[in-house]
Length: 299
Image (cartoon, rainbow, N blue to C red; front, side):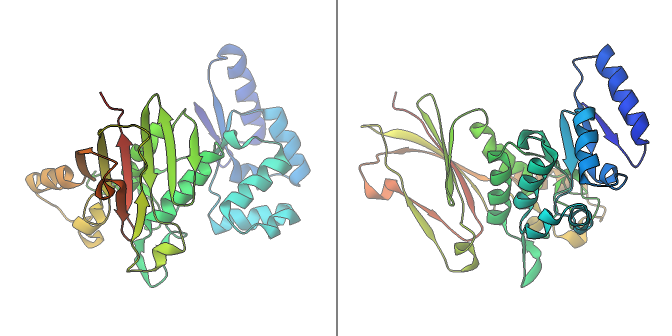
């Protein structure tokens, strides 16, 4: 994929480049960073006409950045009625005639996921709910490799250790290219006879610090099954809790970092369950916790 940035190239040069390369290399996909392109148009109609002519495969936009939202509101009054990033994507798709599957949300920030009472604490449940909503619409997501700012959601910390978002995507991977049922508290998918579940706190319940959600699993099979569970919480897989931000730029011994990397994983359990017993049916989910569950058919 070739990504064009209108802050680095003139619009006419981008148009000529894409046209020339598309004729010579039809297999290449083309993408455009949209914000700086929109800054150069005279109105939303011109933007729609230009983008239709450009016909890129994908469009990058930082939809949760205040500067981007201000730009969109100046271009069209419909954006004044948008309350969430999802609303902005839906309105953009309608006005610019771009399908939701062509959008890529770049540079997601922590700002919409932070705890109002503790700005350093990011709500995991809100992050996975938002990413799930994007993926349900076919919208892709891009992240900084390492945070370019303190508010950026990054894949790695400054020592190259995985951040929680990488574990979330690991949990979401089994749901790609399969039929998925979306619920406010879970995703459920089926691959062959294997059941995939992703459990998380709904947004209103996660605000209660003592809240514990209980899920009852009903086994479609009539005999014991293997259940594989991975749990992501502040004890398992949260590197920022194990290695606080004030140590991110500190020189740390390689041997210590090796152990930090090895310990930075969700908790994994494999058990044989008899779903006729109530204790095997109940799964408890605590505050700011995510569980991925895979139930295998009997053998």
